[in-house]
Length: 275
Image (cartoon, rainbow, N blue to C red; front, side):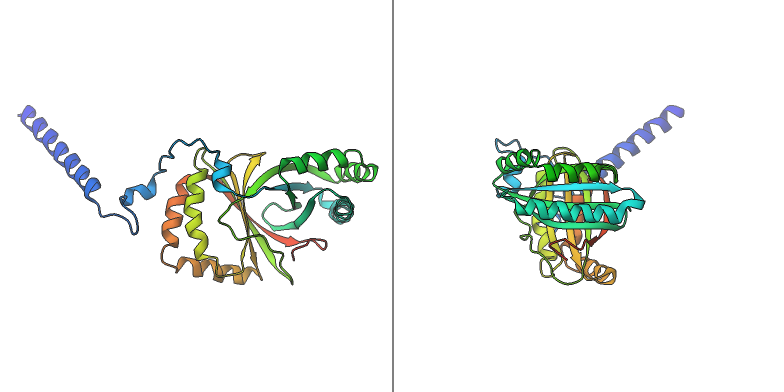
């Protein structure tokens, strides 16, 4: 009798597995896609290519440098003064580099400052600038002074996503949000493919400021910088995106690519080109 019950259980399990297999293979395709709904939960395979990921994702010979400084809490005022003087000095030299934005963190990693620089002419411009600055006594003095004001610092070289709107300085009083993502290795192209569609749901607003991905430093890092009038407008803009058909699909495709993410609210410094 026990053997009969065991056989019946095996048959039942096989039937259930067969039904599940048919369900997965015959599920209706997602909107504007030939793949099943299950594909939204999986990271799709990236085909081999002879092109580097950076060349496929970015078509500009422009390199961005993102400096992240963790400042001693009692030295913030002195630190801002030092950075302003350094910025003025660099811009007075023929280095083919310009400050894009400078911010202090208001929500997130407090006592932190971010500075985004743009080099035109590729890594050759970076080599030239670093060499000249290393021989400039005024710059060296400012750097030594700044070192006493910091707890730690980090530097990344980045490229801009080709589908992201060009960086344009904002006038007036704004806040910024930098949303930083650590992606699973090998998923950068898929991230770019999905965000090339997703950015269209946010392009009608003035909020997209910069979309960047790392080349040197912490790899498979993505930074999206958004501009808002205040926290309330940020809330309304983000809620509006969720009401746009297709935004939810883009989120569903990109979430499985992320290993870690965090958000920081930024306030421009007094010397920041974008306000």
